[in-house]
Length: 463
Image 1 (cartoon, helix red, strand yellow):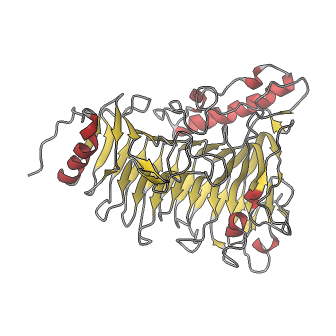
Image 2 (spheres, rainbow, N blue to C red):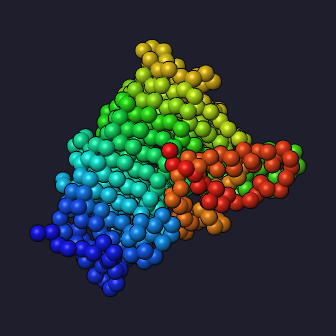
Image 3 (cartoon, rainbow, N blue to C red):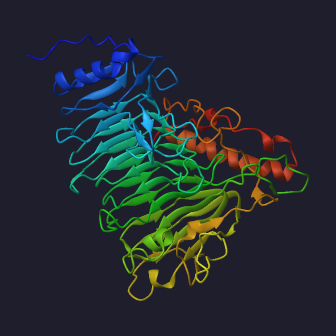
C-alpha cells in the first residue's frame, strides 16, 4: 500500500543538518507518482543532490507559486580543489520517466569562484521520456550549466523545458563560462524561457533531433555571451539536427549604459558586453578545425529577432540542408569586435556584421536554403575568438535588460523574480516594445535611455 501524504503539507527545511537525507529518503521510499512538496518562502541548504528514484515523481513548492515565494534549494555541500557538490536535483535514473520539477528556485552558490567539476544545477534526461521542468528559477551554477538535459543512450525523448527563469550562469572570464540550458534530448520542447546572463551558450542544442525551440528570450546583461542559441556540437548525435526547429526567439546583445547625448544613437557600455554570435550553426563556427569535415545537418532556423550589440547575429558554416529564413534585426543594433589573442594568425575572422556564411553551405552539395542578406566569407572558423571594444561609443541605445536590481557581479547576486504567471508572448511583446521605445527616445532626444528595464516588462501571454 502507498503511504498516505497530506496534499496541504510541505516538508520543513529544519533541522538543516538532516534535510538532504530526509528529502532523499522520501523520494527513495515513497514510490511512483510521489510529490515532494517544499514549503513556500523557505530555503533548503542541501549537502548533496536531491535524487529522483521512481517514475512520475515531482519536486515542487506547495501551492505552485511563480514568484520569489517559491522554495529555494541552495547548493551547500563542500567544494575543494575544483571538485565537490554542484548539482541540486538529479533526474536521470533508469526509472526516471515522467519526473517533474516545478515552481522552485535553485541557487548554485558559485558566488564568483572558479568553476567546479561536476554537473549542472539540474541534471535530468538520460534514457527516459516525458520529463518536465517549468516555472523554475535556476542561477549561479558552480559548474558548467544552469540546466542540463542529457541524451542517455541516445534514447532520451520528449523532455519539456518551459516558462523558466534562467541565469545568471557562469563568468565571462576565459573558460569560466556556463550554459543556460544544455539540451541533448530528441523530440523535446524548449519554449517560453527567459535566459538572462549566461556566458557560454544561452541555449545549446547538442543535436537533439526533432526538438522545437521557440518563444524564448535571451539577453546578455552585464557579461559577454558567447552564443545565444548554439547548433554547433558534433557529439553525441553526430551533429544530427533533423527536425529541429528554432523559431520566434528574441536574442539581445549589449546596449549602451551611459546617458544618450543629443543626436547620438550609440554610447558606451560599462562592462563592454556583447553577444558574440546570436545563433551559431556548424561545428567550425565554434570549434574551428577540431571536427574536420563534419557538418551540422538538416535544422531549421526561422523568424528569430535580434537587437543590441553583437559580433554576428547568425554565423552559418559547416552545415548542410539547413533552412535559415525570415530572421530579422529590430530596434538599434551594432556589430562590433576585433580578433583577440585566441584567434588564428592565418584565419582571420570576418568583419563583424549581421549575417555571415561560408559558400559551401549552399554550394558544392550544401543544399541549404538561406535568406537574402548573408555575406559569404572565406573563413568562418572559431568566431568566438573575437573580443568587444575596450570602451568607446559603439553600443546602441535601447532599454538595458537587468536582473531587477542594479549591477550583478559575476552571477553572485540573486536575480529578481520573473513571474511566469502570465504568458510568455506578452512578455516578449513587452521586451520588443521596450527596445523599440528606446529607439524612439533617441529620435526625440529624451532622457529615458538610461532607465533600467524593469523585469515586469517581460510579462506576456504564453502561446
